[in-house]
Image 1: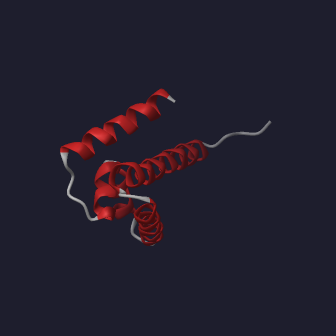
Image 2: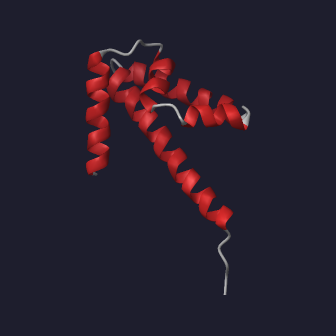
Amino acid sequence: MSVVEPTQVVDVAFRNMEARFWRTVAETLGRVFANGPEQAVDFCRRLETYREQLARASAEEQLLVYHSEPLDVAADLAGAKITRNHIDAYLELVQERAEA
């Protein structure tokens, strides 16, 4: 009989949360902030670079990022100031994901 260690459950839960977080950031960059396909590709590159840098950061720094709202992370990566239109588009995206 195999035994599942509690840390294994936590690891799986964290990986799922992490993947969901980055999918939301990526979708937010593409749907809320990108003004066309070229910019969306640029934002994708920025996101990948940021994730690589974050992987080398301290656990505390990583924790701070994962407690951020994906909209805020996406806005930082896009170099954008969040407007009401951004918030509305983001809430629509989040609602669609909740219904899926």
